[in-house]
Length: 414
Ligand SMILES: Cc1cc2nc3c(=O)[nH]c(=O)nc-3n(C[C@H](O)[C@H](O)[C@H](O)COP(=O)(O)OP(=O)(O)OC[C@H]3O[C@@H](n4cnc5c(N)ncnc54)[C@H](O)[C@@H]3O)c2cc1C
Image 1: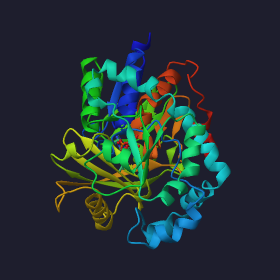
Image 2: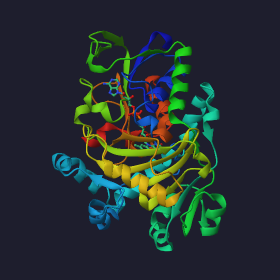
Image 3: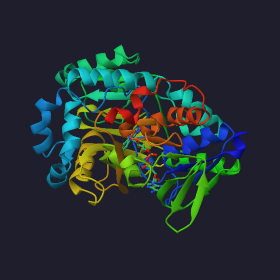
């Protein structure tokens, strides 16, 4: 029966393609719409980690003490464009209000529970699209330069434990044994032994879209301008002037989801935390697994096409070009940690879709049961892609969602 129902998914990043595959698996006719190559936006340049251990949000009670250093030090992974910040103060104030200890504990609990379902959403898609070869399970590591840094991270690590994350503690010798390619000495570390990574996120989305098309999914290379509610259906207006009809629409346009008219996204406090990577061809053998120098705000990740140094947070909106300061920071930190050439082969900027409470929206829109939201996955979009797709497909199929989605409702911003 679902074959007669058309679901349009707007945005073919990792979230949109995962929704599309899950909907297809449920038997719906699915149209995926994106003006760019699927997966080539933020979803292509991330740090590649399936961070099911990532329940501690960037919101942190310690931010108030660290703020001056974060803002004004040239050695900070955090940058902010003052003009942009002044024009977007409400988002920043909401972000800071979510740094209070009780709020952070709540966010961690909610994220922790959803992250436990990571593979329940991901594995069926890997199987369906025959993409298991793009996953490597060597664990992920956090490293701390000094014993003091490690002690400072004690509360966050306890929060991880409290939320069911399993990891072992490492000393300097363990780190050297596990990752001899790191030249800088780190006093302590933790190893998420069971964690995995994608060896190339662009290849994963490409694989998903190939599978989607092979199974009669329709991909349309257009920008969606507006969605209009009609009596019992939806009309989707495209950039080229054409219209499409659908029974349901899923908005999965990442950080750009507010720009689509007619779907009620404009009232949501969605902004972007810009992030960067630099990449070195052929140097992937320097590491066996993703390693995050946690205090420095980045991951070094071995991929099939080189070593990627990815991270930093910049609050500067959508329009400014790459900030050389962030790129230089990553290059400098990478060189402190590894023997790297002076210049990387690739420099990249991406746009994390972020709400001030570090939770995505997953669920029905407030304006209509026919419009669903799947965006705002900030630092965890790759990790949460499968489970987001699964939950969206259950909702469209009118099943009881297999996970409590109340905390992800857009209603929380009313
Ligand atoms: C430096 C960095 C490191 C990261 N590391 C990790 C990590 O290790 N693990 C992890 O889980 N996450 C990580 N993330 C986060 C993750 O990459 C994002 O959360 C995720 O990519 C968001 O996916 P998305 O599909 O929502 O958005 P996107 O990838 O941005 O896709 C949105 C798509 O919507 C399309 N679109 C926009 N407007 C329209 C329109 N009007 N009509 C049609 N289509 C439209 C765009 O063209 C785009 O293709 C990282 C992010 C960054 C920046």
